[in-house]
Image 1: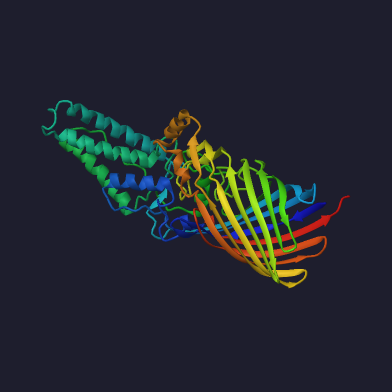
Image 2 (image 1 turned 90 degrees about the vertical axis):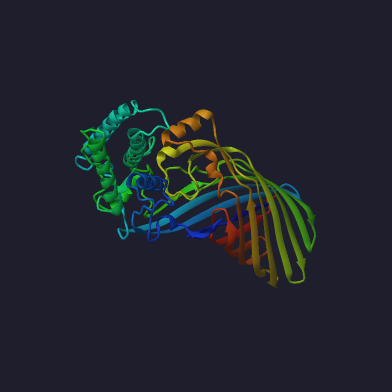
Amino acid sequence: MLRVTFDPRIMTWNDQFTDAGRMKLGAALSGDTVGGRYIPVVARLEQNVRVASGLAGFVASLGAGLLSVRQERRTYPIRAELGLSDRLSVSLMVPMVRVSTRASLQLSNRGANLGVNPLVVNALGARGTDSLFFAQFDTALARLDQQVGGCSAPPAPCAARDSSARWHTVRDALHGSVYGLGQTGSPFLPLDTSTAGKAIDSAVARIQQGLSVTFGISGFDTAVALAADTLTGPVFEQILVSPDPNGFGYATVPFLRNFRYRVGDVELAAKYRLLAGTHCAVAVQALVRLPTGGRDSANDLLRQFVGDHQLDLEGQLIQELSVGPLWLNAAVRAGMQRPGTRVRRVAPWDALLVPAAATADLRWDPGDYVGVDVAPLVRLAPEFAAGFTAGYFSKARDHYAFQSLQDSVALAARLGLPTPASVLDQGTSQRWLRLGFAATYHARNVEGGFSIEQTVSGAGLVPGATVYRLVLRATRKLF
């Protein structure tokens, strides 16, 4: 007996469940203040500007934004099941997967106090201005440190030593603001007309005056080049695709409609019927999910996964029970996911824009999972039944680690600070509950069904998805 099943499914969503609640996919670039909450380089810039300007309450803002994102995943699995006996069968399932993302971004300069770093857009004279500024600053501080050498050891007072410590801190904050850390740049800077920009100019002027008047050190008379204008959409897109240190190094601009087709993870299974009665049927199934799915890229912003591309081992218990017109279907499944590798940009889950320098090839140990699906249906006719569905899924946390100590050291050098691979673990422990409606038709050699399910609760970066499913199955006796 040969049974062929075509089981297409469509998932659509524009938000996701997190441990902190439900969140829109575009929340990171939406709101009156688009700043450091979801963009690590802006958060780092915010701290540097607070130090350099003396404004402890400075909040960095690229302006107001609205990012609308809608994602869709279509899976077209074809399963062929061959009966070897009345109780034993084997099957092969090959899925084609289509993932699609539609996104649009609106930026406004309302409330903006950041603009584009002149070095990023190669503004005329900016590179020379900054080079001269830091050369003069470093020379002046070196001469000041020579005076510190003539001071008595602490705790004896020394104005040169106290000033040197403060001004070195300001210099380092300004250098980090302009050039970034490690291989990561600083695409944004305070606007020269903003409160922070004026405060930076004033702080530099006070340092120059103190060096000249108090310590007799001249030759430091330039200013740092700050942003001249607010961020625009085209420039932002340029920054997204520009490599380090001028941008984030993403492969494409995501603010348009894009999709791709890939083969998903192929499944091999063997099913054995433990009980095949008139009113009750019970079967067990062992399944192997092969690492055939297309790999996603760390260079894709707003990416979707086509498949895990690692080996899964899954066991299932399937039960059908008929009592009068009531037809109860239930399935319990548990899976063990084998370790593999993944290329990721190492950053917390809620960081949307991460520099390409954060990319690393990591060891990945995905969490094991368990799922329960029930579908109580009522037979409205001998061939037709309808009812409700409920599905619960829970997965343990994934674990990421560097493949070697050298990988960890190399990443720290590129980012300018140590970053553990375990930051990627957060948000990988998942659970969700779906509720829906289903209808099914079955004749002698043909079956069909349709269902709609909605994810009503979840945690751990679970899409708030609506799932549409169609089942078409044909059975043919071979011998």
